[in-house]
Structure formats: structure tokens, C-alpha cells
Amino acid sequence: MIIVVDASVLVAELLRRRGRELLARPDLRCLVAEDQWDEAQHELDKRVAAIVGQGRLTSDQGQQLLRIVHDFVEGDVIEVVPRRFYGHMENAARRRVPRDPADWAPVALALALDVAILTADNDFLGCGCPTWTVETLLAELGPP
Image 1 (cartoon, helix red, strand yellow):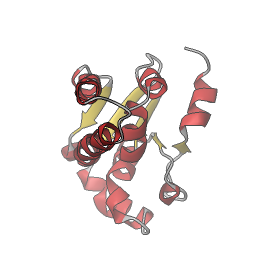
Image 2 (cartoon, helix red, strand yellow; image 1 turned 45 degrees about the vertical axis):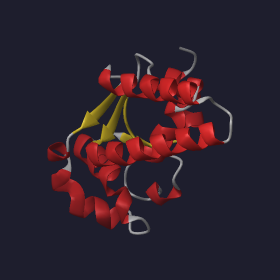
Image 3 (cartoon, helix red, strand yellow; image 1 turned 90 degrees about the vertical axis):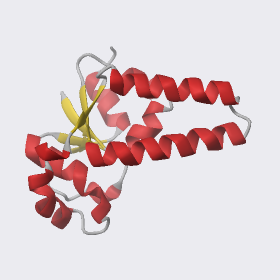
Image 4 (spheres, helix red, strand yellow; image 1 turned 135 degrees about the horizontal axis):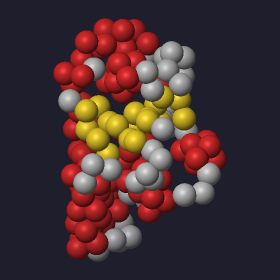
């Protein structure tokens, strides 16, 4: 199964062992729009800094977690798709997510490839692309 992963779900799941296990499944191909990956990287740094600031991780553990996350992308577990593959769908995608135009990139990528979006964001409902939540995707895929 091929899915486009929304930045907020990507960040949340990359920070969880369960999420990394899901995203790394061999029966799942996870794509993220280049525009969303830029956003996700910024948010990952911010969230790990907050977790370290709360004392839930040491600074070294936080850096190790960020290395694990970046290895996922460099190891092709998450494929960052360049804008040139979905940019032609930007106008259509923006019309389909009027409540949050910043969400256009995953919709454009999903439209260009005719695949679903993994999201927890209700702004994607009604965009014309199938959507999955993490819980329903886990149930659909079953045990690894």
C-alpha cells in the first residue's frame, strides 16, 4: 500500500516506536511531500527540544532520537517526493483544503499519484482523497 503522510502525523509517529515500526513495514510505502518534510523537520526539532526541556529525555537521548528519525528518511523508509512531481496539482489541492491552505502539498501529491493520505487532521476530510488514521491503518494492515 502506498500512502502520503501528513506532516503532523509523520512527526508524531516518528517520535514513537510504534509509529516507526508502522512506517517501516515492508507492505507500506510512505511518501511525504517535499514541502511537508521541511515543515516536519522544523517541528521534530521543536518537539524533541520540548521533550528534553520537560526532562523526559536527556539531551543525548534527544539527539539520538533525531538521528533515528533522520535515518528513516535517509534509509528510504520515508520517501520525500520533490515538488516537481506534484506542484502541477497545487491549485486544485488548495481548492480542496480551504480551511488550511498550508495543507495543499499532501493533497496535491495524493491527487498526482491517486493514493490515500495518512492524517489525523479533519481539514483533509472532503478533499476528494481517501484518508487513513493511524489506528485504522494498523487495523487494516494487521500484524506485521
